Length: 439
Ligand code: S3P
Image (cartoon, rainbow, N blue to C red; front, side, top):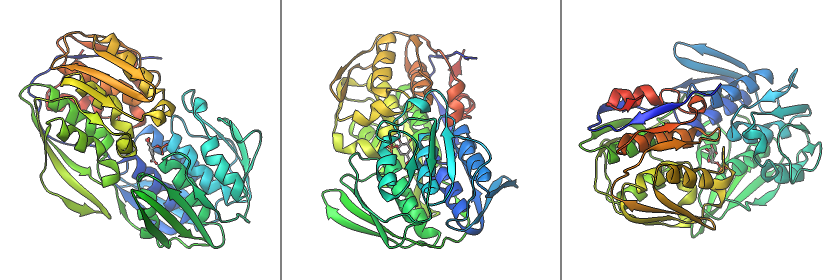
């Protein structure tokens, strides 16, 4: 059942809040915990549908997953120690969970059926199946054009490969590296633009040997030494910058706002939206930069700001791929044109986000156009209109347009809030805590 919600004009957001744990790191902690021997205690795990689907999947594959005093404890049987599940694994809305787990399944001699919700069933799986079948995974059907539901069969005799990523995708990189854990020798992934590097960082943390060779111009070759042994470790998950982006965006566009978002992951492979917003004139200060769990984190003080349109280069896309919908919403409040270049990957997310964002902006009376892979927003310093926006089963479209509604002169209604639970269940209560008005 759909649950519409209206965001109403709000002013002066204030106060300090902490966003929930990073989604990417949470998935990886659960997965590596299931591949390690011994116990992995995960503090600050994102307690949201996407991650819970991954936790249920590793439990169905034989890992022990228990909640304990606010943390999640995962105990695995070591690399290669998972066993066939009794039924299909349902990854819900999660591209990350399903694609990373395909890399894990590849190294086990077992048949697995994977499925997901209507949004996930539309998303391309060929991008991970191509390298994984080259390593030895058997796929029922045409792997190049595959979508879920899907039946695959792994093998204990995976071949190591050298794989040049055809698209800048951390999910594809991670699937190949996770499969490489089970292969003899060295598996290498070459990326031409930096994508989020949490898998590499965390694999090392769990005891695997990972080498990163800088190839210049943002390119690198990442090599994992196979037949690895992983050991359970404590993991602390920092706050998700992709969730923080909505709070940051709201503070920038609601007049008189001054907020602090605490404990935000500031890994450079994820920080493109902060860089872009600062170029637009956003007052965002890092208050206390520190390291937590092997990742840079900080508290962000954000004040409402007069913004100008900018050109966002295509090379920056991987470091802010999930933030474009909210950036586009904020760009409507800037003076002048914002061009977001090179968004081909944005079309393949939980919805076609380039189209859904442009349509949502138009529904709110904002001038926006699609030019090939670019999205162009004509900012007018304010948004006079309100409107009703279709979210297309996409949590980030839902939150981006609720954010826009807080800064607009008239209310914005979204057709459905239910998908917000996949990544940021506390979004509305946290916004209300800062002073936002809904309904
Ligand atoms: C993710 C990588 C990105 C991102 C997704 C999470 C990850 O996808 O959009 O939300 O955790 O590896 P791609 O790797 O497909 O770009």
